[in-house]
Length: 409
Image 1: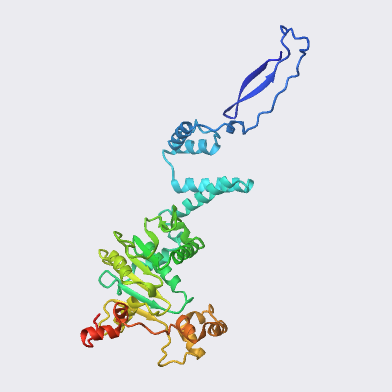
Image 2: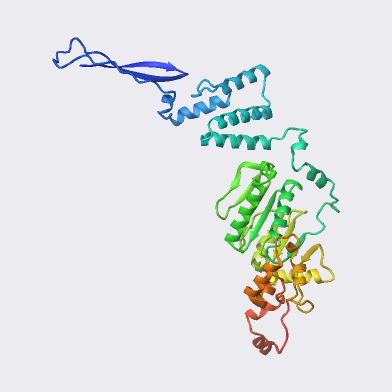
């Protein structure tokens, strides 16, 4: 009977095997036994990768590799030996130079094998790390260098913002969301803020704002400032962490939002929907941060915008305090709401070419006079601070109980 013999071979630092079928054993009494031809299989360089290593072996290999011992590395890449030799000869390594060299080698390998997804991923990670590791004196390569110098020359007027509260009212699609993104990113990357919270009234709005902010960062040089693995996509926990440790969190507003948090900046997007309970949960988050700031952003008044209306009344009062109020709106008592010049004045994006009068004419025909005034001209009536009082008692019932006295805010 033929005998199977296993011959061990060692090639390229890996152990493989070659199976050979010997000729028939002379002692074999089987009459049908006859010599069998010797067969062999050419050993593939990938044979050593067929059997997966155990977790213990992989863990040991990782520890040795991290310590500079590449004896257990399966592939035994020349780069490992070269790096070890360079480190031994020079007594240390230059992280920036090593990253640059690794990036060059990975880029060359990626050109040779563009379909290798694992290689492409390693190249991307290495390039991100290289971009984030700016060496000293490389200010010319820092896209924020000029802005950092400008931020350093800001007159803080006593060490804080001139306005601790900012209100922005402008009709829809006029870039108020982009303005607040610029404010959030500049605070975290230029002005030393550690945590900024972007809130909205609905989870869908929060998710969309997170996606647009991430797209803005990834399509610009700012992507080098995002920490590796620093983007959290989990619904309700969306967060971007930067290499300096600063964070931008996105959350849906509720009466319990951000309790126990401490932040430097809060954006209240769609501020017309902010309720008293939500304001009570969010505004105290800024209390122990002396240079904190909150922005209220809305497209205009709505019947339930009591908190925003109260802030506007404060802006119109004789003593607004540290409040900055910016409003683009038409006044029905003064302006002709059918005048296209009024439309242009109220929508600053028209001057930039983002909105057109032709498009606004279509909106006017579709939304009607009242809807167009509310959505495109921010000209809907502002609610009174006392408007919510009649939700408990009607005005007639209150008059009957109090003899006609008015409730006070």
